[in-house]
Amino acid sequence: MSVGLLQAEPRLGPIGRALDDAGLTAAQAASAEGAIRFVVAFVALWTIGRVVVLPLVSRAMDRRELDEHAQNPLLMITRFGVVFVAIAIAFGFAGFGNFLVSMAGIAAAGALAIGLAMQNVISNFVAGVFIYTDRPFKIGDWIEWDDGTYGGVVEDISLRVTRVRTFDNELLTVPNSELTGGVVKNPVDADKLRLKFVFGIGYGDDIQRATDVIVDEAERHPDIMDDPAPSVRLTELGDSDVGLQSRFWIADPSRADFVRIRGEYVTAVKRRFDEEGIDIPYPVRTLEGGLAFENSQSIPQQAE
Image (cartoon, rainbow, N blue to C red):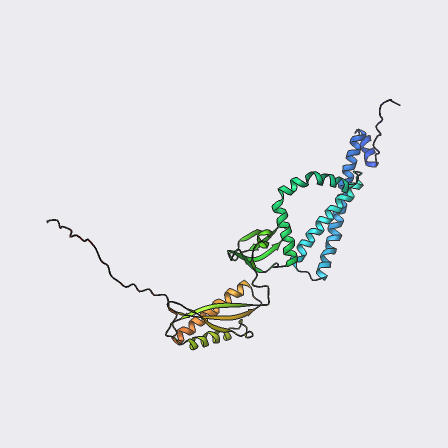
């Protein structure tokens, strides 16, 4: 026995002994064996999670009739959980020690740097949690934000961004903090939507007759609701017209229905106005006055 400190040789399993017999040193064989055991354990556990755990969670959410808006974040969290558990168990199976203790040291060392570098990511993540819990909109809803500057149909909601398809078929990838830090309009959240349109008639036209035409065309349209009933209010006295605001309701609203129904209804009212001789005036400006010239001088003519 030597006088110096003795280093205990690492204990080798079957894989390590095979590598040791192949010519590796005991330390190299132990490291290689640990890496192989880690990879094998992680792949096996991740495969079990993908094949067993995720389908079970998905079926459980289907039984509870959760919509896609709720399922996507929950499935993402489940995947993270499967990966974390697989790493933790594989870490111990490979003989690397306690995974949680090791992670605590790594987390303490990198927490400050990660926190500074990921401020926006964390902000969007928290905003995504609020969107999930508050449910201001869901996948398939038509929304508008930034005072109507942007709008479209929600295609996907993740924990960091929301993807919105505009009506020009453009895809907007919006950070979640943009949608929780301001006002978001969701016209299709309820089971019906009230629309308004102002018809301008001439000052010499019969207001009651025009009102009857506007209401009658609303009642004729098959997609405009009878209850609540359509109504008309005189709301404007413009420079060249009298404004009659039509108010009517549509059921199960969507952007396509909103545009189509309003267009058909306005076209029908315009056609009836033409038949009834009701004028829809356009602005007319009359300029009066004269021109005066001061200090005018005669311009001499050139001799021919």
